[in-house]
Image (cartoon, rainbow, N blue to C red; front, side, top):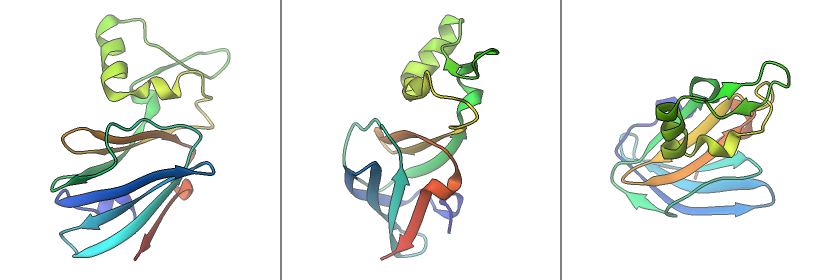
Length: 131
C-alpha cells in the first residue's frame, strides 16, 4: 500500500512525534480500513493533530517549489516574490538548507488545515501498516 492509493474521504488522528519519527492513524473510508502511517523525519509542521472527513495525503517533489543552489546542491528560497509566498503557504521552508539529493520529497497531509508537512528522504522512509 502506498499513499497514492488512499482516497480523499478519510480521517487522520493520533498524530505524534517520537524518536525521529512522526506517526498517525489514517482511516480510509473508501476501503473501510485503518492504517498506522509512520515517517522518519527530523522536523515537521502541523496545525492540528486530527481531522475527520476529507484528509488528503501527497508526496511532492521539493524541487518543484524550491530552487537548488548550483554549487552546494541545497534548497534555497526562490528569488521571485510570488514563489516565496508559495513556499511560505505550503511550509516548504522546512526544506531550506537541506541537500536536494538527500531529501527530494515533501510529505503533506491536509484537510481544512495543514495536518502534517515534512521532508522525506525516500518513499521507504514511509511505512504504512493496516491496524
